[in-house]
Length: 268
Image (cartoon, rainbow, N blue to C red; front, side, top):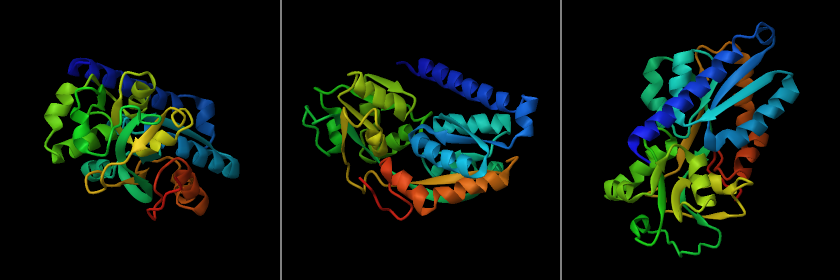
């Protein structure tokens, strides 16, 4: 997939998110209800769906999750100036964008970590050596560093190993986010991808793929920071979501989906 096509896909993704966000604020009946919007990176969407459902049942509010690549989501919330929470796939998105004044208080909900992902039972015998990504007998699909957090992390890992350019040139194609990396592996387009390891524990992926962990000094755990947006219409409800996310119940949900919790513990 050429870079032009990737950029077109990203533009469509951003416009789709913006359409959803703006529609949330245009219905007079909806404006009478307490309804909040959370921008959530794709990999964290499943645990956050469980967490927000628990808060909805407890508080009687409506919580909408819009998911996508972390950078695309930030551009959407910056443009729309609507919404309440932002959970990207890496703390770097807060660090780089904090000066915009849109990201307020935050809580550390856990950690994600990049890993090799292969078909179940590892039929090609992939090892944890990062240079496996250059094997001639493997079909490789990687994420575009300009869209999803896993693409940014992949670039960091491969650059540290000195093989970034070669690996990306050899890729079958680039995709936009972790969900499409998993799809490439499920569909047989790839023998090997670099993805967030938690993706392998999703129900649709667990039966067909497994993790080959990279050395932690190469693939460091990434902090997952749930940010309160400074233009939140209902910050008190957003804080309820934040509080539940770091409660024992919320932390158990993150562990269930393959994440390290805020203490660095794993349930898998």
